[in-house]
Each structure stands twice: as structure tokens, then as C-alpha cells.
Length: 76
Image (tube, rainbow, N blue to C red; front, side, top):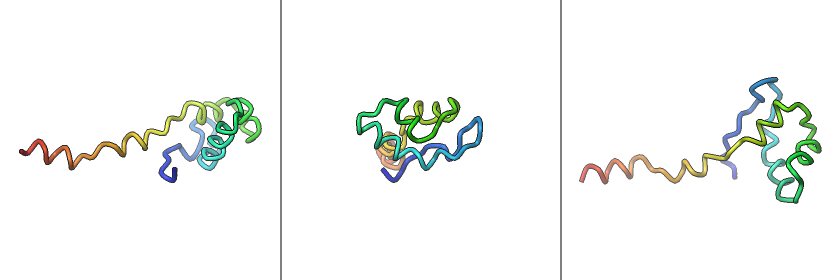
């Protein structure tokens, strides 16, 4: 989705990787293996590869929690 939270740059080498997440997901959905997807995107350094492989899109799960809703039920 549009609300993705992947770091903009690789933590180790500083390469910009934030713009590669959507393409990575598309390749995985097209039955590429993780390694082949990363190779075809030109991510050869293992520091960059781990950024995409280990990223979990938590924003979708976090959006399920509404802090204000919880506060009003506790007040009752």
C-alpha cells in the first residue's frame, strides 16, 4: 500500500532502498525467489539485501490500534 514504512537508506552503507520495496513485492508475487528478486534489482551487497528481506510491514497492523477508542472505553 501507499503507507509503507521501510527505511529510506540501508543502515550499513547508506544506499537508497526505500524506492525498491514495491518492486521487490511485485517480483516476489511474480514467483521470483528472494535472491533472484534482489539480484534483478541490482542489490548485491548483503547489507542492502537484509534490509528488504527482513523488513516487515508493521504499519498495516499498527493502524488497527485506535488509541482514542481505547481511552473512551476505560473512562466508562
